[in-house]
Length: 341
Image 1 (cartoon, rainbow, N blue to C red):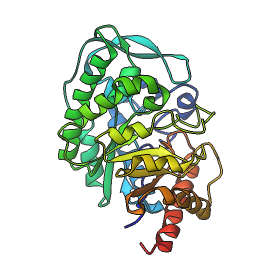
Image 2 (spheres, one colour; image 1 turned 60 degrees about the vertical axis):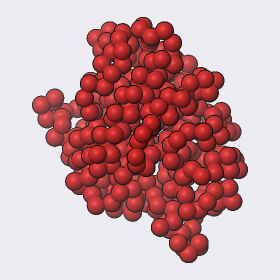
Image 3 (cartoon, helix red, strand yellow; image 1 turned 30 degrees about the horizontal axis):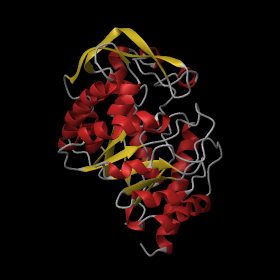
Image 4 (spheres, rainbow, N blue to C red; image 1 turned 30 degrees about the vertical axis):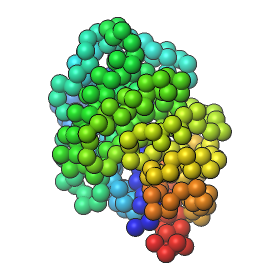
């Protein structure tokens, strides 16, 4: 089928599960932020499962083809995995600048980064048991985790990033074994810090994917629209991803009105095309979505396009997110019919 649809990863968590006002009033946490949860610890896992069921059913009702767990169990896209690794002092966080230039508490690396156990395998198993559609799970990328850490151990950031890559590689193998159809690496800091990404970011991503059998994707973006309000006209780091071993590239085009001719540099890659503007509280019409898809078609192989939002929907009101998903599915259907697919 042409133009299958999917979330980037996250979907709004219910107000009964997480304090959304506190969540929106801070930068995405890099260390654990247990104070955000509204449910007592002894009931939290059950509540997260229930919220995941809601996220799955909303995606199905909206007509999406590739289903995620909505990242209901996460305080942010990265901290759940990054704080589950050996080599991190969780009791004494470090500090690092976020992509907007503000200091943020981050994991402090005091030893070798190692994955001590699977982190998201149960998430995949639960997702697989609760939908018969294709499923995708996301994991933070090694370059981004290295940028979101205070290095008090390694001789270089590159060395640290490669150990993060080894941890991600082990996790991805287990995620596919647990039933994932697609595993996505989230690497927003490749756009935020392109010079370092050129220095060792691609090496780390390729190491994370070394020997992996299965459909993989990499998400690169300008940041959550609720937090990062200014959008550049184009990516600082995108054509370089043609040199990665990842199968698909997830990027945003709607809010930034991206010049989609840059996609010609990614020939051979599946393009996960961001066509939903998460800075706009209004739900797009299906025709608006269709027009955004059409903008890309002169520059990509239509058989290698997946339609998605620009970024994660975590910070949207739930009714808005659901409406935007419906519009996305309807817009993809319009263009699919035009191409006879």
